Image (cartoon, rainbow, N blue to C red; front, side, top):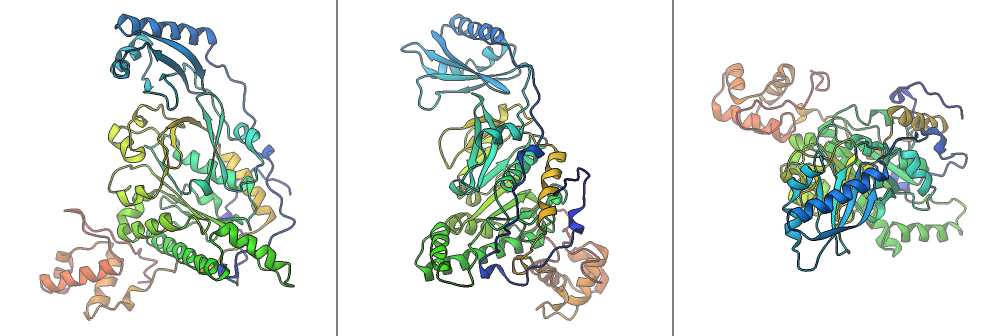
Amino acid sequence: PSINDNKQDHSKVPQSQNEGTIAEAGEIENQSYQLPPLTLLNDPKKQTTTSKAEVQRKGKLLETTLTNFGVKAKVTQIKIGPAVTQYEVQPAQGVKVSRIVNLHSDLALALAAKDIRIEAPIPGKSAVGIEVPNSKISLVTLKEVLDEKFPTQNKLEVALGRDISGEPITAELNKMPHLLVAGSTGSGKSVCINGIITSILLNAKPHEVKLMMIDPKMVELNVYNGIPHLLTPVVTNPHKASQALEKVVSEMERRYDLFQHSGTRNIEGYNAFLKVKNQELDEKEPLLPYIVVIVDELADLMMVAGKDVETAITRITQMARAAGIHLIIATQRPSVDVITGLIKNNIPSRIAFAVSSQTDSRTIIDSGGAEKLLGKGDMLFVKNGGSSRTRVQGAFLSDNEVQKVVDYVVQQQRANYVKEMEPDAQTDQSQSDSDDPLYHEAYLFVVEKQKASTSLLQRQFRIGYNRASRIMDDLEANQVIGPQKGSKPRQVLVDFNEGEV
C-alpha cells in the first residue's frame, strides 16, 4: 500500500462495526494483512559520543578523589552508555560501602558533574556503580533497538531503549504482566507509551493483539483512532473510562468461563485447544487475541471516579494475566492518592522517569534514584518486582514516524470496533432512581449552569439545606457531579450538549 506522510484524522475513517461480539472469540485473520516494515522509521544519525580519553581521565580523577578522602578503591570497569557512563569501583577490603555513598556531593564536585547516581552495590557484583552524565547525550532511536531484536515470536515484546552498556532493552508484556509508567512533565512518558504501542503495531496483526486506549488528556493517543487493533475508539471521557475498565473486567470473567469449560488454564492453553478443535470443524473458531489496555494519565480518572477505577484496576491486575489481558498505566503525578497502595502492589513492573523528589521516586519504584535522572527519556526500569533497577535511555520516536505507521495499518484494514466493549453513552440522569420530584429540575439546572453546590440549589429552588443536600448526594451517586474536595466547587461531569438539556 502507498504511504501518505501527511497527517490524517483517522477518527473520520469509516469503520466497519463488528456486528458480532468478542464473545465469538475475536476476529478472523486477515490473510492479506502485512506488518509495517521498519523502513517507515527514521534511521539513526551518526553522533559524536564521549571520547574514551575523557572517560579514562574521569576514572583516574574518581580514584584520586576517593583516595584524598581516605577511601581506598580502584575503578575496575567503565561502561559508556548513551546518556551516562558507569564506573565500577571496587573498594579495598575493610572499606564500608556507606563511606563511598556519603561522598556523593564531593564526587559530583570533583567530576564537575550536574549530578551523579551511586548504585551500592551493583547487584551480583562486589563493586559500587557510580553513574556520571556524559557531556553529550546520544539519541537512541526506536529503529536501532528494533533492528537488533525484531522480528520476535512474542507478539507482546516491546522496545524500551538502551542500557548503560549500550545493549538494547526490550520487555515482554505477557511476562510483566502489567506496567506502571510515571514521571514529571516532559520526562519522556508519552514517547515511551508511543514506543510501546508502535512496537506492538510493528510486531502483531490485528487478530493477534487488541488494544483499548483511555486518554483523559484527549490529545496524546488520538492519533491511533481508526487503527484495526482497537477494540473501541480512544476513550477520552473520564466517566466512560471507568465503564470501559469494567467492560474489560467482564471480558476477563468471560474468558475464565471459557477456560473452565474447556479444561484449560490460560489463553495459551485455550488457543492450543481451539487449534486442535478447529481441525475437526468446517466453520473454524477464531483464537482469542491478547488485550492490552493503556491508560494515559491515571490522575484524571482518580479525581473523577476514584473508587470505581481503583476497584476495576485492582481486579484486572490481580486476575487478568492468565486471560491474556495486560494493563499499562501512565501518570505524571506519582503521589499516593493517585498510585494507591492497592494499585501499586498488583503492578510489579515499573518505569520511573525523572521526578522532582525522592518521595515521588519511592512512590513509583519503592526506592530513591529517579530524582537523579536527567530527563529526556532517562529512566529506571524495574522488571517484574525484581530488586535491581536498570537504567535505560528511552528510545525516541517522532510524531511523524507514529503517523507513518498508523497510516500504513489503516490503509490495509479498517477498525473493527466491538460494540459490547464500548462504554455506554452517558446515561440520561433524569431517569434516576431519586425519589425527589425536584431532582430532574436540579439535574437540568446543574448541567446548564455547569456549577453545583448545596447553597446554589437552596437559593434556586427555595428549599431547605437537608433537601438540597440529599439532591446533591443523588447527583453525585449518578455521576453528574464529582465528589466534594474541601472548599473547592464540585466538578460537573456531564457537559451541556451531552446532557441534552
